Amino acid sequence: MTSPLLSVRDITKSYGARVGCEDVSFDVWPGEVVAIVGESGSGKTTLLNCISTRLAPTSGTISYAMRDGTMRDLASLGEAERRLLMRTDWGFVHQHASDGLRMRVSAGANVGERLMAVGDRHYGEIRATATDWLGRVEIAADRIDDQPVAFSGGMRQRLQIARNLVTRPRLVFMDEPTGGLDVSVQARLLDLIRTLVSEMGLSVVIVTHDLAVARLLSQRMIVMKAGRIIEHGLTDRVLDDPHHAYTQLLVASIPES
Ligand SMILES: Nc1ncnc2c1ncn2[C@@H]1O[C@H](COP(=O)(O)OP(=O)(O)OP(=O)(O)O)[C@@H](O)[C@H]1O
Image (cartoon, rainbow, N blue to C red):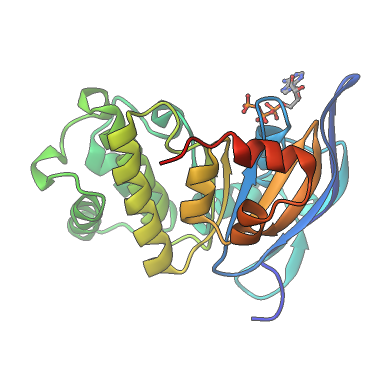
């Protein structure tokens, strides 16, 4: 494919007098993982929420290559079209699994619900697919009827990933997906995300303040500071040869492993 999947142009989001992000432009190509990094308050979440239509930008345009090949300005989508896109063609993995799961319905139903959203109606098939996906995210099949409230943080996050990926979306947004988890749990989760993303050929936009996460998962990296992109390039290049003084500072602050 020679055209981008998502095209972000001159996105600005203001909260009254405060700038969330400003004049941000970049493309996401099919099958690539783009990491948005920067310190707290640099505008990463604001940008992610704007490009995933969870937040309306103050100005700028975001276009998306729909499954039928047409490039649509996301602001022109009707509410029903937007919701369908979010439930089927896109995924959104929240930092806190409780924001992306229904905590009081079973693990199987959390996964099955997304399948029903794309029109699956056969109970046996839905349950079989849900069981298969629980296995793919390393949750034992005998936990299928348990509610996520009874799961550990790492399990909840893996369930949230299964719920998002079961419909085989083309684009997945992730907001600090490993944030707040123990280091060993993080490592296992990162490994799982990396495997699934590569097996499924997913495009991903991931927000993280952790450069090690960006290094492990992404091919391209966007560095933000005070709402603006200050450096953008291939992840290895940005991390091995940062051009901007702020990026140099960020890279220098990664603990030696
Ligand atoms: N709802 C809001 N109302 C007012 N200002 C906001 C709001 N949300 C974010 N901001 C401001 O916008 C700027 C960018 O915040 P944002 O949360 O996007 O940054 P971030 O890089 O995601 O930070 P963190 O890593 O801490 O989540 C900050 O100055 C923040 O205070």
